[in-house]
Length: 395
Ligand SMILES: [Zn+2]
Image 1 (cartoon, rainbow, N blue to C red):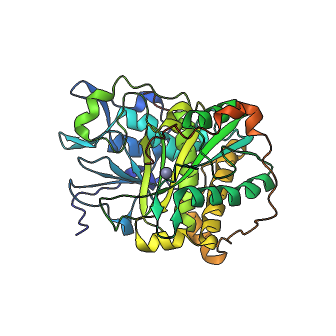
Image 2: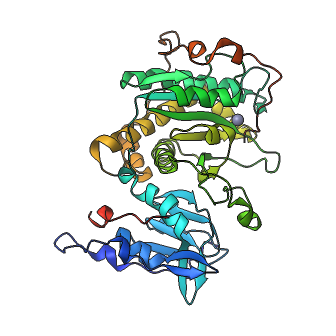
Image 3: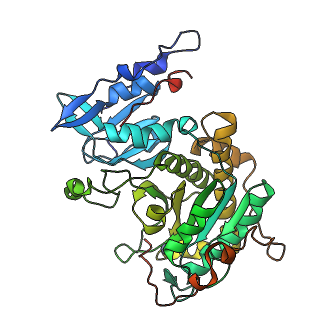
C-alpha cells in the first residue's frame, strides 16, 4: 500500500569526505515557469542542499522506513523533511518528466527547515512568552478527563522552571484560570525583550474520533494558503500579509517539533501554517503547539496524566533550548532521529515540581494594564557539509 513508484537518489550524496563539494550560488538555481509562477526541480533542490530526495507518485504515501532527507508526493503539499512531516504551501507539480517545487516553498519552507541555523537573527532569545491557550469561560476542548484550558496551563507551569533553569526569562500570558484576549497575548509578546512566543493547546475534532498526534503551526507566508486551506482557495490568498520573522518562526517550529516527536511516540501530523490570531498579531518568532487530541480516547487519557504532561513540557523545553543554540553553534539542530537514539539510552524524565515554582519574571498586569485581563464578553477564535553553506534563494 505504501508503494513508491518513482524514486531516484541525487548524486550529491555521493560526495564523500575527500571530494571537494561544489558551492552552489543562487545562480545555480534553474527557475522553471509554470503558469507564470516560479518553480525549481526536486533534482535542483537535492543538488543544492546535497541531500538525497525521493518522490512518491500522486495518491501514494511516503514510505517511512526508507525515507530520504527530502521526500515529496507528486500533486501533494505533503513532504517529509529530515524525518518530520512538513506541509508545503503549494503542491508538487510534474512537468516534462520533472517534479517541481514552488519557489515560495524553497525559500519559506525548505530553506528554514533544512538550514534553520542560517536564518538571519535566528536563536536570539532572552524571553520565552508561554501562552497557555483559552482560560476562564473559554474552556477550549472539553473531554471526559478535563478541559484543554487546564491541561495547557499545567504544561506551561511545568515548562516555566525548566526554561528559567536555562537562564531564560519567562512570561506567561496567563497565570491562572481566566481569559486573556488574543490581542493582549500578542501585545505581551511584542512588548518583551528578545522574545519568542509559544502557544500551548490540545486538539479536538468532531470529524474523526480516531484522529491523534502532534502538530505545530507558524504564520502563513505572504501570498500563500494556510495548510488547512484547499487548493481551490490558493489564488484568494495573494493579498494576505506575511510576517517579517516567518523564517525564524519556521526554525522554531522545526526545533520544537523534532524534540516532541523524538521524545514522545505520537503520530506525526506535521509542521503546518495557519493565520491564527496569536500568530498573526505577534511580531516575534511565534509557534502554536497542538499537543494531542482530547477527542481520542487513548490520547485523551495520556494528556490527563500529570507525568505525561511533564514529559511534554520537558520535550518543548529541549526544543526551545535547541532553537537558542542555533545562534551559538551555527549548526543544524538535533533531528527526530537523533533524539530517538538519545532517548533510548536516557529517556526524558517527567518533571513534577509544583509548589517550587518561581513567579514569572514580569508582571503581566503592569505590562498591559489590569482592565484588559477579565473580559468575559470577548470571544476567542477557534482553537484550532558544505552545500549547506551556499546562498539562499530569494522568494
Ligand atoms: Zn485550543
